[in-house]
Image 1 (cartoon, helix red, strand yellow):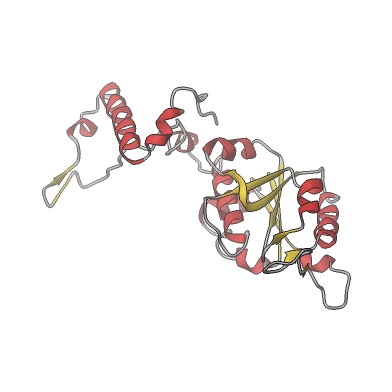
Image 2 (cartoon, rainbow, N blue to C red):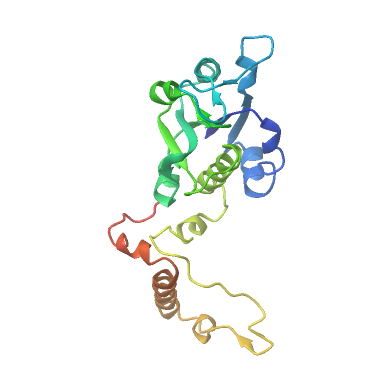
Length: 234
């Protein structure tokens, strides 16, 4: 998968997207990640990317002409990709959307800043607005990193173990079951006996009971959709 990120702060991505699973995916060619500073497409001598909003109001608005020029240049480098604006007004990034995006061959992420983005760019150039939650952060860079991380996990081969992504929280519409490892006993804290039994059917039944109980306790809203979702695929 190729992912292009349009941002005013490409240096923000150095480090978080160079290590661990994402770093390996980039090294092996599963993820082709490219950063573009859209200030380079500002035409005036001050490289202006924002201006005051028409009609008054607080803050500055990113200019439609600069963003459009940058996007056209990036789109021309390869077959067109799905254009996503990271925005608090967008569709919530959940497991269903992550898997939908992971099926794309190319994504172009646009990181907003300041008060917002000229609506004409959104209307004519953006395919989807995506939010990582009902709160506001300073810019689209952190949400873009979250999206890239979540989507990369779904790429075949990214985790090494194909079962891992299919057994995580939200993969089946439920939270994940509790996890334990050695030692089996520590300070009187014991691992549930069923997990030490070697009885695979009982273990799987226990895991499912725990998924349901944990979801009912912590995220009962997820149970409304449980059973109506298609099985999580690779």
